[in-house]
Structures are given as structure tokens and as C-alpha cells.
Image 1 (cartoon, one colour):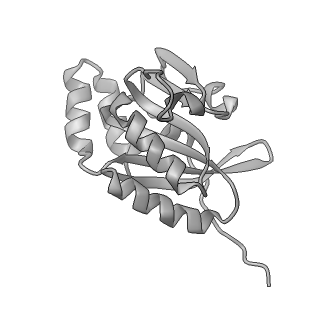
Image 2 (cartoon, one colour):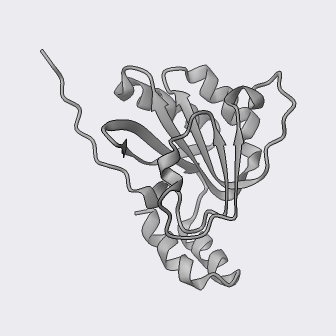
Length: 171
């Protein structure tokens, strides 16, 4: 018996939302994400996944969006990553996981448990399609995230054109 997994396609504006000015890529994140953007990302850093593991001494910059290409079946790797890198994600920032590995539906449930143990929650998931190669994508925010407070902060910072987009982004 073949089980067909139905999933929605994740919008690129959720991967790099209007508020994201500083982005960190860990691992082999799809480059096509940066070919189309609706706003200006000020700075993009690239680091290897290994550079943020416990034995590494690299310090990541504080970013609005952390993009991670990872084998999502490795719960311990995700837990280690969260422990070592979460301080580099801004208060209202997000982590986007581009998942490789088999058994995604099982992995998603495991990832949700790991996220919850570290004070994060899953807010979107679906397929990001790069050509004919779909990639399971999970987007997490801090469990205490408040989109209204975030939108107000964006407006107060003089980026009023992006605050409405932020409220729509979290739907």
C-alpha cells in the first residue's frame, strides 16, 4: 500500500517575511529563496551547521530569520542546534528548517516536541518547491511570540509599510 502525503506549498513570504532584515543560513539552504524577494534583506550570513555545534567556538550574529538545512530525523542535532543558536535569533525572529531525511510526518511530531522543550512552537509547515524538488519546510517562532506586539514594534521603528504584512504573515 502506498501512502500519499498531501501538503500545502509554503509561501516564500513566510520563509523570508517582510520584517527580516538580517538572515543567517546554516547548511545547504536553497539559493532560489534569494532570487525573488519582495523587500530588502540588509545582510545575509552563511555558516556551516558544524560551526554552531558544542565544540565549535563560532558566534552567530543576531538575526531575524535563521534558515537551517538539516536532516530532520536527527532530534538530538536539532536540540543541540536550538541550545547553541537560539540566542542569535531576535526576540520576534523565526527559525526555518529545510528538512531532508525520510519519514517526515514522524519527524515533524518529534521536531514539535523538541521545539516545545526549548520554548519554540511550529507556526507553519509545508513544501517549498525548488524546480521539481520539493523540500519539507517548518517555520518556528518562540512560544511567547505576539504578532500584534511585533507589528506595533515594526510600525514604531518607522517601517509602517511592513507592520500589516507581519500580521498577515502569521495567519
